[in-house]
Image (tube, rainbow over all chains, first blue to last red; front, side, top):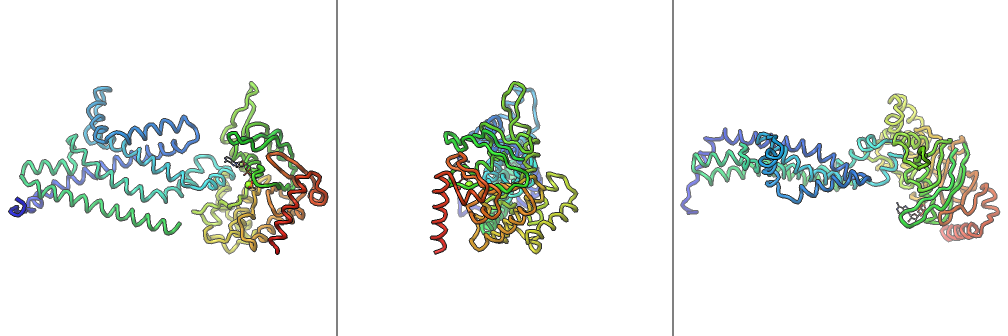
Length: 223
Length: 259
Ligand SMILES: Nc1ncnc2c1ncn2[C@@H]1O[C@H](COP(=O)(O)OP(=O)(O)OP(=O)(O)O)[C@@H](O)[C@H]1O
Ligand SMILES: [Mg+2]
């Protein structure tokens, strides 16, 4: 059929509103899970950097558990299994945001941990020797230096997160992929619509990855 | 002022400090020498509780550092806030300077006074500027550490230590990481501090400096004190054979360096 297929991209244009709406939900999912992932990831990363096993071990278990199970299973579990166990049902958008947030937190935790571990021991010594407490030392000396080195892997993780939001379609969240599938059911134009979808994601995500690579090279050159 | 008694420290099975007893007086310039691996750095780091000692006590003006005795006689970790407060009274200057690279020289110096001692920023900056002038860095106030020479960085680090108005400053081989031509400027600053009556504990291989500026010199070997004497007699008439041997080897190295 390849050579005989006639593309009809005007269908996509006609239904552009649907794409815009889907992109809005995708952005919302990304922002929500990013917020959860950053906050929880920082906490877990600090716990994993701690000297006390009572802090380190639970954080390590969390990180390994979330890295060793598929995201899709985590989302489905949160949406279908959790309500049965607890009687607490979140809406689909909240479920996906929380699920992806919990998932990405495991990866942010690793970025924070590695960033903190990359700071020279002398910096900790100097901060302690002028009498800084743990919080002051982290906020004013360690994290400001660590965060600079974490920016490139950070941006990569955001790009990954954005791609993972398409899993929301499984829970009937009207993000981009789900909107596209609905549209196909109405228009019977899967090629145009899936192609547009792929291009749309590329156009959003590639600049992010490009930026992270540029930054990485820039930061390397400076240090 | 700094009283160390029965101090022991292990790193795993490695018994690094084997019962140190010494008291450093207010205003004293106390020099520590000894071969590599003898535990000099570990001793200094214990005084500031950057390493936690296993037995014995370190007291700063009578206040025990790091550990307290609980009612049952058990040793318990002191509250973090107490440890920090005591640390802020004993400043430290490191071999590798350890300036904060994301802050300017002035910001490095005012950091402790503003954040730890909660001084008003204006006053702290004024004092910091005066200190930087004293160590000869008034033209580098707004420079970042990476743009400074080693000698300038170490002088900035000394200003950072002074800004805490500490009871004592611990120096761990402050000139060992410097190019030979930059050693003098740092030693000159330290000599000035000694003459002003600052309490200083200095680990160094600069024997000339130890002789000229030190009040007492302590020789360590394998985690123990093998000799402790006034600077003059330490160098003129060392009594322990290991001190004699150590000084002779240093002299040999210096004369071969000079050749
Ligand atoms: N953080 C550490 N972990 C394990 N072992 C250590 C640590 N720091 C020091 N040591 C060991 O403790 C011993 C004493 O080291 P220390 O650094 O105190 O010696 P030093 O007298 O300062 O030597 P140098 O003149 O080389 O600086 C050495 O055997 C060293 O390997
Ligand atoms: Mg040392």
